Amino acid sequence: MSEIKRIILNEMSYFGAGSRSVLADEITKRGFKKVFVVTDNDLVKFGVAGQVTAVLDRANIPFVVFSDVKQNPTVKQVKLGGEEFAFSGADVIVAIGGGSPIDTAKAIGIIATNPEFADVVSLEGVANTKNKSIPIIALPTTAGTAAEVTINYVITDEENVKKMVCVDPNAIPILSIVDAELMVSMPRGLTAATGMDALTHAIEGYITKGAWEMSDMFELKAIEMIAKHLPVAVENPSNVEAREGMAMAQYIAGMGFSNVGLGLVHGMAHPLGAYYDIPHGVANALLLPIIMKYNATSCIDKYGEIAKAMGANTVGLSKIEAAHAAVDAVKALAIKVGIPERLRILNVKEVDLEKLANSAFNDICTPGNPRSVNITDILDLYKKAF
Image (cartoon, rainbow, N blue to C red):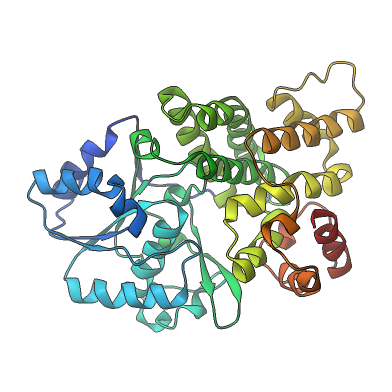
């Protein structure tokens, strides 16, 4: 008997510049009465959140805003958001932002309907929640995390200094609105970091142990689109074609990895975020070519496909040469968009590498890696990255 596969996606998504205009109609026809907006202070300050709340204002839909969300959101912030949601009387959550606001919204929404998980830390891993989240409508403002289409979310447990990866089909937003106009104001560094995060999702989702034909289809297309559009989006932020290309590519990558898992790059990136508050996309991008090289012989045929999707000419190359071409293409892209090449540049301390390796070994993403690893292997990889 063949292995049973599963795929979970949003029930509905909209794409295209200006697509946030459908928000009010969707809220009204679904019968929601009051909106709890989850975003961050920078998006409020620079008017990005306002582009969305203006749609609610014009339709006279009442809302309250919770913007106390930081990069790498914490258990404390989720608890605070949960309290404010309960007080608000809202019946739907609109999440505006990158992975941090959307992940925070997922945790708030799950706890609101599953109060036995109010401690937040019990949500780590595959939590046995019984009820679907409060309905969430997600509008991403970065082209990286694909949080708007995934069953995953990440919350930092500051007390235990770790990033908790939570996997829960009940947390997936009911509706996603992927409007590239909300991404135009992203600065160069954030565009690069989130774009490389999307590339990491696509590559790890393609080679992870759980990958299969349908996820492969998504991930290869995402790799091709990111290689084409990311350099343009970084160099020319106002290029609408590049912004829309990246918005679509990161969503497609999410459709795949959300259903099959990731690998060691994410396993090693999460401790860097927990201990040093390094942006997740930067950590992924720095580690990706190093760990790709480590994994090459375990999925050598797929590396040839990655090389071609990245635009490399593999005609006449042996399998191992094509694999090296894939690694080189990823590294060249990371350098081109300005990703740091060494952990020491990010003020990581060499004395902490062993502690980081232990955390990475125990991360929920690590077992999905195509090549088995132990703590010594991970420590060696951190040293190479240092």
